[in-house]
Length: 321
Length: 127
Image (tube, rainbow over all chains, first blue to last red; front, side, top):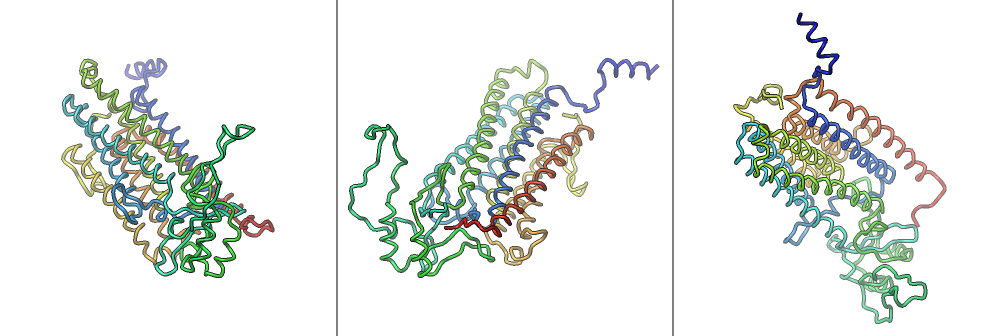
């Protein structure tokens, strides 16, 4: 008797091998496919990095800023961002838990905190981008596309272009679209021209050049003054900050992957916040109270945790390793 | 969500009274792991940066292992895979693990090959 019933259920699709509702299962499908997308990005980042393993920028030297503070604080801010995201994951779990127990007001409060955490994270990421694009020291690029950075010989600290470049009076003006015959502009002029940087470098014996190559000790190669003097003759271009073509930190692919992967992740966080806001208002309006269950909160919760999960990997592969 | 919560972590070493309490416990654990990662990243102990295992620094292996540990607790406790049926859990977890390991293996191997081509070839890249 019992077997007949089960068989009918099986034929009629009544079997529940995964024990999850349709919506939840679809959310998991999406998460798995999205995880594969991110894995593809991170694996291609690894590919490029292994390809240029000797010249890849060192993350500690790139991400050294904390808002409102001056100085060299490698990774503290990213660690803070990680903590914020994990924390908002916790409030999300608590919101799911409150929903599970049909506690509407608690769910509202926890959803609100989750949204705040997400907003802080997105804001921090925007700030990171702005700092990264602006750059801090400036560098030169050689004919072969290699980046030359500057170091003060006496202290061993990085030297910004403004620290030693000389001001040479000249007529060089920004070439705009509206003055050219073919309506072609040029990239914004850097704050110092190549000649000014070179002249300043020649005049100041305290400035040395640092190349991209990483030594056995895991640091960038520092040239002697004589080597630096011959190396600077290869320079062709002043680079300040970062864009999709070149950046002052080193390998061009480094900035491209930074923009692409953290950008894609930031977009996920942003859409997560938007979805959280929608769910937040739905809870307030009592939609789930009337529906009799808060499964929707759980589903966006899964997405939100996934965003957190991806960040854990981005954090490791971009900032730590 | 399954209506029962499994309230043990570390294979039953740590038992919690309620689901909420377990979440806070996991948060503390994840925070400690992140703090250890950042601490190691800033100090970079010499013993870990000079020794290598399968072509990578010991320090980087530690980072990767700790990341996987964090990922496990996020998936198992925050995404409550611990409370799901094992069939669902295995479908979700093993499919990406298989595909990603394959992808990583093949891409990193190829990248290392290209690195050697650049290094030993007769074309100058640094000028």
